[in-house]
Amino acid sequence: MLGLMQDWPLLVHKVLDHAATYAGDKEIVTRGIEGPIRRTNWQAVHERSRRLAKALARRGIKSGDRLATLAWNTERHLESWYGITGAGGVYHTLNPRLFPEQLIYIANHAEDRMIFVDLTFVPILEKLQAELKTVETYVILTDAAHMPQTGLRNAIAYEELLKEADDDFAWVTLDENAACGLCYTSGTTGNPKGVLYSHRSNVLHAMAVLGADVLALSNADTVLPIVPMFHANAWSLSFSAPMTGTKMVMPGAKLDGESVYNLLEDEQVTMSAAVPTVWLMLLQHMEANNLKLSTLKRVAIGGSACPPSMIEKFERNYGVEVMHAWGMTELSPVGTIGSLLARDRLRPYDEQLKIKSKQGRPIFGVEMKILDDNGKELPRDGKAFGHLVVRGPAISKGYFKGEGGNVLDHEGFFDTGDVATLDADGYMQITDRAKDVIKSGGEWISSIDIENIAVGHPAVAIAAVIGIAHPKWDERPLLIVQLKPGAEATREDLLKFLEGKIAKWWMPDDVAFVDAIPVGPTGKIQKLSLRDVFKSHVLPGAAGGAGKAAE
Ligand code: AMP
Image (cartoon, rainbow, N blue to C red; front, side, top):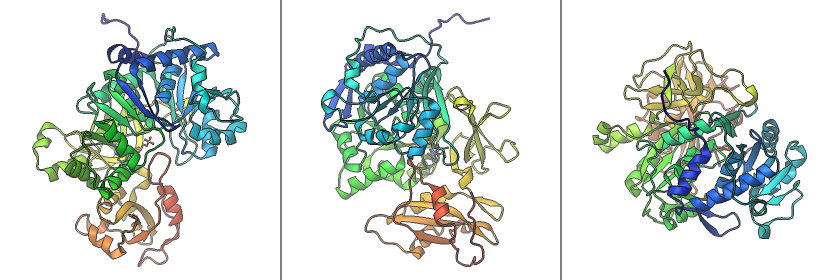
């Protein structure tokens, strides 16, 4: 017997209808790429998105067509997403931090018909356009006055495109399972693979992310999404904020500590989300200038492990609650978030900090378990660690055009490629990417645990731990450190700092100092290139063991 509820497809443009109707005057503030701050609201974004959708339909865009964006977080980027999907198309985010060859591969693989591009990235596309076979039109996200001289094919200023239509347009009606957004994984090995969100998955995920134990966004909040729309769906904020009519502040191209701080204060931001490297810049700016935060209440930190020292600094020094989150592009992207169970909130702060340093508990719609190498489920005891697998309505069941083949196991679980522990209360802790785990004497050493502690040393800006081949133990850890500007520390200082904080056999065999630890296009430490740089490193007492570092 079927239920008797209405058939109301979950489509993302319905979210925008809701925002425009019930929070129409709530602002979206953008630091424009041209310079000045721009202000608009949900009602205007709604109107302009419909104009765009109509203009695109007139230009022959059909359901399922992929239209790419190569853009910072701005209100125009937001309108592009809604206009594209409202015309039945699929927004496809290109990450400007990728190598040119990767951008070419991705745009051709996606068969993008148009690219919406910020002024900043026009020169990149000018170099690539000969290779971009399917792109018919380049839309420069600016107005006629700021339109650059460009040789891009059929280039048109975004504001001119909007003039091609009025807003008398009914969104294209689609099945809720229709494709909505496309985002390629960064692909540290092999070609990037396309994660294809549906309208339904985006709406369901946004609803889950809104929850009080997740990002807890409300109409009273002002959110600053620093996490880019071009990476992992901007943690769903482009859909969850309008669901509740939250004010949004879009940072544009300026993500340095001072610019972020000024936006936080000037726009009275209450909630924000970013990867640890961005927060590091903000914290350094505030410390150097003795600044405080007057309105910020909560920050979500994820994308790579958030060190406990960062959580403590935000919470103790600035009164800002940290929600440590884990996710991935394939999960839409939020998988777990570190909001504490009621009973854990009563614990002394040091105990809370230990729990908050884990990656948190699964949000609704994410089933998870850990498996050993033979696919057998491991206990949820907070100690056993194994391959983290997940299942849910906003989790990939395959990649675009079937790349990578079948990605689900016989029960429909997706292997995240992460290694983790789960405890009895559901808190999950990532120990490593499976390919970064250090195998020493048959046991596993967590590189993240050591890095988290090392960055607590006052002289350390970024730390990375990799496995180096060892004649007796297979691999032993090498700690690689980038010091803060002007700071000093020796190998012995750092080893002493780790002493007593980690098991003896986890102690790095050596410490190396570098000017800059390479960080990839999505804010993650690039261990592959570090392993390459240090492939001939000889650990003390391991002569003859140098050679190929583990992959
Ligand atoms: P991406 O799809 O680019 O967002 O990358 C997803 C990967 O980032 C995950 O599989 C993890 O390896 C890593 N990651 C994301 N959040 C965290 C976190 N809080 N702690 C540790 N690793 C994380």
